[in-house]
Image (cartoon, rainbow, N blue to C red; front, side, top):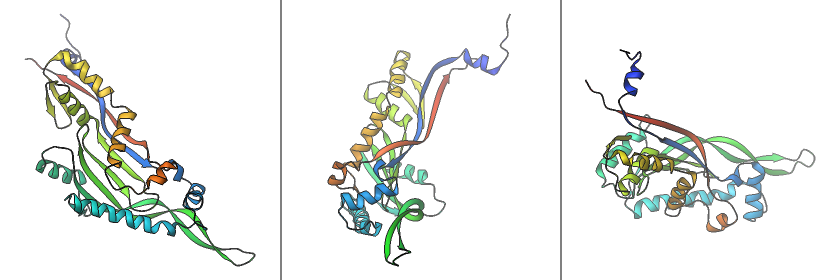
Length: 267
């Protein structure tokens, strides 16, 4: 008789199914054409038509963006709250989720002050003439960040974060397990859910279908989520800006990929 030598050997004989999927995905939201000083100068002068390049000239745009966010919250009866120091944002999200019906909606908008990379304008002087002129530089500053926590029909809970300061960079955070569960339910696949995955699939023949759903969380699908909600929410860039190429893109900041082993242990 051959005895198993390790716990892994024992567990491997009782695997019911295994799934690989993206877990938490944290993405940068940025405009590629506004990453360098020269690009910002071009936006201010060539695109907007200002005679000088000064970030102070886009201050009214920033104020209008914040006003639009507050107006959206008021018009759609969305709570607008200020996060307090040490508060876990995910815990607050779960509180609002338990009170919702799970349908597609914005749950709440939270505001926090955080340090961010920004463009500023310094006043410099020509050493030869003594004439003053503006000069755009990169810097960091504490600025208001607006977190929009929402539920999507296809993705489940997620959040979008926008900086209130030009060039309005942000973040998108989704959960691949939530996407997979929503898609499996739409496909009529029976399963028992965990908070962050699947506890069981009713029919083992459906396991490849669930894996295909997990594999189907492609960059194009995620980009579709972003475009859908950018079209619904206040946007800091005008249609003319976007037509000129000043459009948000996504890049991966942090990605957690998990492999779920589901096993049945017999005595």
